[in-house]
Structures are given as C-alpha cells and as structure tokens.
Length: 96
Length: 297
Image (cartoon, rainbow over all chains, first blue to last red):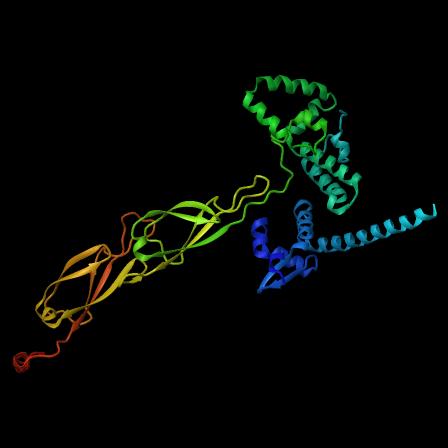
C-alpha cells in the first residue's frame, strides 16, 4: 500500500477548517469511504474530489448528512443513466 | 449589455423581504447547483444568475442602487463614472485589478457594481493554511533568561523569542507561520512544543528548585557558614547551631524564573544531610566518649 496516496483525515480537516466529526458522520452514512492506514483514518486521494463536492453541498446549500446520502445515491444513478444514454445514442447513430 | 431583472431571476416581487430573498435563493441554488447538475451547461448558467441576483438583493446597499438605477442602468453607469473621477488613482487601479477576477459575472453586474473589489463577496471557497507543529529541545539553563533563537521549519528560517521560565511540554503559537492559505485565506499557525532537559543538579517543581547538600556533623552542631551553588552562581549560607538532619532552608527568589512574569522567581529549597564522620582517630573516639558521658541527649 503506497501511503503517499492517502491523506490523513486530521490533516484534511485542519486544512479545510472543518470538524473531524463531520467527515466521520459522512463515512457513517457511506457518503465517503475512509481507510485505516498506520492506525489512522485516511482518505484515498481519488476520493478527495468527491468529499470536496459533498462538503461544498453541505456548506453552500446547508444540506445535512442524511440529505447528502440521498444526493450521493441519486447522483450515482444519474451518472449511470447518462452513460447509458450516451452509449444508446451511439448505437442509435449507426441506424440513422 | 441587457438589463437583468434580478427579482424575476429569483421569482420575487420588488417588495420581497430579506428573508424571502434568502429563502428563494436557497431554493433555487439547490435546484441549479452545478454539483447537483453534472454536465448541465444550462444549470451552470442559471446558477451564476441566481448567485448574482442573490448578491445584489441580499445586500441592502446594492439593492438600493439596483432599485434606483435598475432599468435605466445606463444612468447608473454615468453615475459611476462621475463617482470614479472623484476617486484617487490608487483606488481606480485597485478596482481594475480586482475586476479582472470577476469573469463569472454578467456585464450588467460589472457595470453597476464594478469588479470583485467593490464590496463583493468572494464566491471562491477560502481555506486557511495548514498549522505546522515543531519540537524544540533546550536545556534548563537555556531558559533561565529570555532569548531569541532562529528555527528552520519546512526550509524557512523563523526567528522566535523564547520567554524565560518556559516549561517542559509547553506549546507556544506563532501566528501566521504555518502553511499558505488558498485563495488569499490567512496562513496557518506554527505550534512549537518545548522539550526541556534538566541539565542541573536541582529538582524542579514549578518555579521552585530543590537540592540536598551534605554538611559535616560539627557544622550542624556548632553552626557556621557554607557555600551553596544556585542557578545563577554561588551564595554563602549560614548554618544555625544544632541543625537537625533533614532540616530545610528556603533561599527566596533563587529558584526558576516564573513564565511571563518579569523579575519574578521561584525559591530554592536546601535540605541538609548531616554527614556522620568515619575513620575516626583514637583521640576523636575518646572525645565522643567524653560527650557520651556528659549526659548529651
């Protein structure tokens, strides 16, 4: 496991000026996935944009963790449907 | 440059209260937020309009100006021009610089309220810089008096003042010496934790110092003068006649400096350990026998 790819939650929270408990609640609601690295809660760097997006929604739109969980779920569905539409369009183009 | 009806953007009438503006903005922002509308250019455009409308209508001063010149915004431009002429060159150049950053705003907004330097809120999220932690190892004798020291933290030299009497494990904060903040946010702070090694023969409890010294039996019985080592040098101390083993004397103000209290020091406590003589000569033994027979208690 390359620890350079992981960001310690304590460090992340200090940098973003947020409470560590908020990130832990988001983990509880399965909005964000944390991993234990060297006995410390860490975030994989690939998860960073997703967590930043959720924090933006929380801070800018005052959406609570329950709301974020629902949004996260629906956004994943939208993303899947958009991909499906895109591939169907490609197939359809062949018949046009 | 088209006139933008900010009330219409938020679905409000001109009589809308501040609370209604806030509520309408929240409702629409949730609908058009770019994070909730991935790959939707129209939603992004609409979100910018909503933000712009909120920025004007939620600020009483801007709203007043907008209400006054709104539809006849050309007049507002003239008004602004006249106002700008009265302002100093410095202010003008500052605004021009800030204006360059406000690409997200409509021309209409720019013409009425200038660039981002015109009391406009930064929409970019700002994050304070990271705090740095460092440990500084010093000897007890290093912190008897205040001094300055240069530290290298993350390749940067920082000169700090170390106050006299700082305790082992104590942490001090150096404001603004941490990581750089994003988007102009303030820098983080530097926290220095002191590790103080006791390189003296004194035991330290708070600002008080303790030491046990040996004194000869004869001096303890007859009294006399001894020389005692303190943190700042040697002092002469009078030993009272008939001093008991384990007796303690206090040397006021000869202890450790009290942290951040100028010219205030703890005390030095000296405990006497009376040394019983060994390898006595026959004569000395005879003298002790005489003492024994003299009903000495």
